[in-house]
Image (cartoon, rainbow, N blue to C red):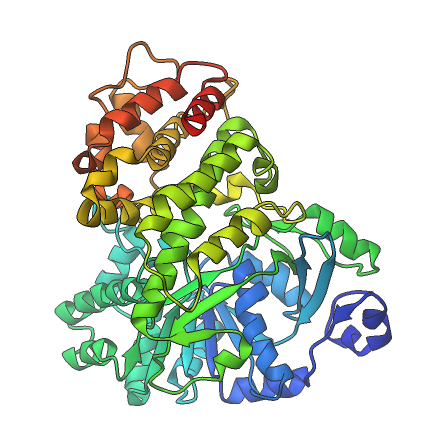
Amino acid sequence: MDLSKANLKNTEFWNSINVVLPQYDIDAVKEATYKNPVWLHVGGGNIFRAFIARINQRLLNAGLADTGIVVCGTMDYENFERVYKPFDNLSIICDLKPDGNTGYEIIGNITEAVAANYDIKENVDRLNEIARNPSLQIISFTITEKGYANRDADGKLYELAKKDMENGPSHPLSCMGFIASLLYERFTAGAYPLALVSMDNCSHNGDKLKNSLLEIIDAWVELGYVGNSFRDYVNDPFQIAYPWSMIDKITPRPSEIILDKLTNLGIDNLKSVKTTTGVFAAPFVNAEVPEYLVVEDLFPNGRPPLEKGGVILTDRDTVDKAERMKVTACLNPLHTALAIFGCLLGFTKISDEMNYADLRTLVTKMGYDECLPVVCDPVILNPEKFLKEVLEERFPNPFLPDTPQRIATDTSQKLPIRYGITLNSYLTEHPEKLAELKYIPLVIAAWLRYLLAVDDEGNDFEISSDPMAGFFQDELRKLGITYLMDGSVSGKLSGILSNETVFGTDINKTGLTPLIEQYFDDLNKGSGAVRNTLHNVVAN
């Protein structure tokens, strides 16, 4: 049986293999959404289908909504052509439970998948039509942290952002240029209100989105493409709002094991693909069961009853605390630590790393002893319970095929949030305790060691994609820092560690630079040095 809208009518087959079907009329939802779209999402990856789209599907199943979600993308157009369209925009969500059982649900509420390709007129016309419709209440985003950036770590404009600023709103090339263009369409159609909701793991993600858009729009104003009234509209929170959010759900790349399971159940036409940009995708998503989405309740054009779909709606301060709890303390920094050491030590599953005593001790002590003490309690989520769930249920889940190589992607973009905020908290709140830190400095040293692209056995390996990796590799080479270098790096890393854009603070101000340099030397002493250094640090 192929995965297709027509075959969903064969309820006997789907029920026989325990696949939950949409409980609404897909065609009716599609028609209603086409006429009066409420929700546009940018970024059609795994987290969107496994979580965001499912929130809306829960509302549809309960009769609390009558429209679905339109998804669009500004890159990886192949994803739509190879993963969405051949399957009528359907997806199978595979819930991977720690006991080995798997739950299956078909997501049917993605009514359109439109590539934001300005070389395809019909796509542009449709997206502009959606933007102009007064019914639109939400544009949400899962585009990763780098999707919001107009500039690199040195403050230099990326070429696409530069062209968008110079060329105006007619033919944007970057994601932020595209959104600015949609907002201009909405402004000229009637200046209708709208909420732009970033759902990416960025600290104060709503502000990051707003600032990037305004930077482009300011250039348009200066060059005369748009007037100040448009800039005022985008900057007015009663017209265009940028709620903060915290999202959490681990959605690894598609697993061949899960693909085999689905095929053995009798679903015939599924396959995984790798796009030309290196993204792994499939018409199914394998994901853990736990999920959290905390959103600032700021929607100037109204909103669906998101709280009935599993969203925690609250105020900005609480979102900030929840996001800080998760991203800087209870999950993301631990994930990055496992990613860096996992790549160096040859692991290919996060769960296997949690079976290795020294790595389990590293993330446990880092979480409880170094991160948790400087996190405010958001109340809506208990930090200690959250951390306990991460360490004892989520990371060790052997049926979640997550890899350190995936988590290591874009590490340079993650460091300022995952470690910089915590270091700054110690600087401002507990400077006397900085000298007690040893696990965060170890991870920073391990990242620099990782950039040498040689594993703990002395074998070359390919580091994960990262926009700043080449820059730092060049900096290390300029300093004469190589694998098994002669001498010590003592006094050589201060320039690198002063990069506040990447580390979130000038690490030299923390007094931790000598310790990081010592750790780096220890990690770089030859075969087995990473394993030995890790053990020596966590055992003491």
